[in-house]
Structures are given as structure tokens and as C-alpha cells.
Length: 422
Ligand code: AMP
Ligand code: GLY
Image (spheres, rainbow, N blue to C red):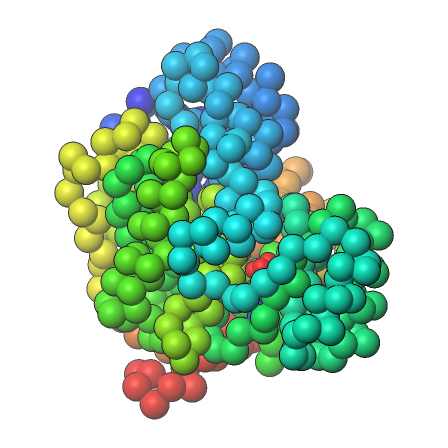
């Protein structure tokens, strides 16, 4: 198979490393990739939203399968365009990608099909928002309807804060969802869907705040580990039965069959798992933690999803290991930060056993590695326990010499504080 991976972050580096192991692979390309990915795939200088250029490349190189990392090209219709020229795509059509693109679409779907989620109301004006806020008890959550890169969600602790939040969000977005605050532990759960068949992958836990102790601004994710001890087979069965399968069925019924990986952001509440949000792609950094745990061939799995043949291949098996990934970001992320700062020690860190160094935004020039973005590296440790995986990851982090970067030192804290943590 000739495969093109779309994206250029640590998630795509992990995807490229996983796919490169497959005996089914003939040639691997990544657009745009990054300098780290260049070691495993041929880089193609195309932006993820350049749909027409991507299509041209796919035809020129006779690509058999396109694996899409981020949501943007999916929402722009890359999968639809590929289907029109008969090329397989791992990632949903634009109508199915609304599961990520529109919070309102998901909330209405949950209501119609009885999928557990926070009680909510959609509003379009400040007057409607104020009326809804008056009906609810604080805290409450206000969300912009549409892609907002994690910045469109405000948790308001009282009605005054909620009104200010509504005003702020309505200044930039046409529509809002106002919903009940859910209390509990948050889990990212992943399942493959090929239109009809659902195959569970596994769960991971992300760390969204920038600093230790879950302090500071929200980020794309500062670290993740898998499997989370808060998760178990009962919760998985419950989630599949009450959330994932009904969603897959609903999308078929609506004429928008979902093909790809469905990422459910769940809150484990006292009354069971509830859906916070869907993403139509792997999470970053969750993907980095999940991929090495498969005891099998990722390319075979992703190809089966794209070709609607999930029912015909064996269920995935998982290695008995724990993975824990730490994100290294440029000082100042998620706000402003410097580029082109020098990173040393990467080879020394990569030499440790049970470690993977994944690049999110690096360049390599004149023998020096430099930082080129906010989240720059993802350092993954593997072990038989969460503590062992954590120690591995931080041993590698400590070999990286990057004065202008920072990371959280407490990735995995929820799992590690449990009495059963080894
Ligand atoms: P979302 O983009 O919908 O996942 O929201 C971003 C983050 O806000 C989530 O990861 C949660 O930490 C938090 N959040 C969203 N909705 C709720 C809710 N209804 N109750 C509590 N926390 C929430
Ligand atoms: N780590 C959360 C996300 O990828 O959206």
C-alpha cells in the first residue's frame, strides 16, 4: 500500500511510526509532517487544508489510503473528495465530521437518540441566553457552536459570570450551547467505526491545563497516559451500549455513516459515563499513548475502517503495558512564545529503552534541532506500571536540554495517587 498521512504533529509522528511497522506498507508520505517525521516518511510540502493540492498529489502518486490526523481537512470535505475519485480515506465525510464541527448537532443528536449527556439548551441571542441562564443552577457551561480549538468553552460559577460569558461568546459566534456542569473524572475513549461496525480501541486520560496541579490556561493537551485505572470493562461496555453504538446507528439513519475513529470525551459521573464532546479523529496527545499498546497491525485496522471491512478482521488485542506521554512546549504556550530556539540531547533521550520521542514542531538545520511551534515534542515512556512508564518518560525528558521549553511534571497524577497504583 502507498499511504499518505495528513498532519504535522506528534500525533501524526506516532501514526507514521505505527504504520511504518506494517508489512502491508510499500511507501509512506506525510503532508506536511515535520523534521522528526522525516525520518520515517517522505515529507510532502502541502498544508492540511490545501484539499485540491492533496487530491492532485494522491492522483499523481497513486496513493491507496489517506490517513487524516487533524479535523480541519475532514470538515473541509477531504474524505468526500477522495471518495469521489475512488481513494480510501481513514476519516469521516464532512457531514459525519459535524460530530466535531458542531456542538449543537451533537447535543440534538443525543437528545433525539437518548444518549447520556449534560442537559442543555441552544441559544442564538443574548436575550435567549439570559433567559436560559435564569432557568439553570450554577455552575454551568457555555460553549460556542463550531470549531473553536478548545477556546470556546467557559465554565461559569454563577449567573453573572454566565451572562458575561454569553456576551463574550456571542460577539464571535452565531450560536451557543448552555449546559449543565457535570462533575467527575474525564476520560478520552476511542472507537473505530467503518460506517456500521463499531470496534472499541481503548481509553486514555489527557491533561488540558498548562501547569502542574491542573492550573493555568487550557491547552491542546500537555500529557496523556493509557490505560487510565479509572476505566474498566464495565464502563467500556456501558459506553459502547449507551453512547457509541447509538451514535453510529444514528449517523447511518441520518444518511451520514461515520467512518474513522470516534473520540468521545466522557465525564464519569455518579450516574454513569456521559458524553462531553465528540472529536472525529485521534486525540493529541492521547494518540501517542494509545498506538504503541496495540498488539497488531495499525495499517490493517485503519485500512479495514476505510474500506468498510472492520467486521472481517480480528478484534484488536492490547499489550499488557502502560504508556505515559509528556508534552514539551515552548515557554509561553498556549499564548505567545519564541520560535527557532535550540533543542539539544534528543538523540541521548531517544537512546533510553522503552522511550519514544515524537516530534510535534521541530526543524533540523545545520546539525541543530530547533523548536517551530507551541507544542514541540511528545516524550513517551512505557512500562508495566504507570509509575514505571512515568519514570521512563521523565528520565528521557531530563536528557533533553531546551532552556526555552517547559513541561508538566505531574502527568498521570490522578492514576498515581490511587492506592492501587504500583
Ligand atoms: P469540550 O470542548 O466540550 O470538551 O470542553 C472542553 C473542556 O471543558 C472539557 O474537556 C471539560 O473539561 C470541560 N467541560 C465541558 N463541558 C463540561 C460540562 N458539561 N461539565 C463539566 N465540564 C465540562
Ligand atoms: N487532547 C485533546 C484533543 O486532541 O482534542
